Length: 119
Image (cartoon, rainbow, N blue to C red; front, side, top):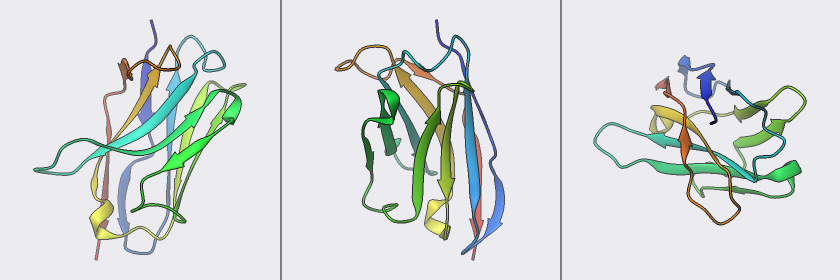
């Protein structure tokens, strides 16, 4: 069983930065995939960034490339999302997710943290 708890959301002006954290019970070193998703009001949940085991690979949604950076610190059992140059359209609830098999779906989810970017 994996439990994920996000933190670091808040209100920030456009152009500002935030860093989201996701603490994972049971450790992260063995998880083959972790990711950040977000869901804006009235929209479906969408992938923002993904990272493989040992940070072997990362991927980003086109809308955040060059502004967001996903990373994981397996020694601290924590996943991060550094968000720079935030835009109002980044406003959403951000969720941390994890999967326990390489080709499986993301089976474990955090409760979400609200990010609001004012113009």
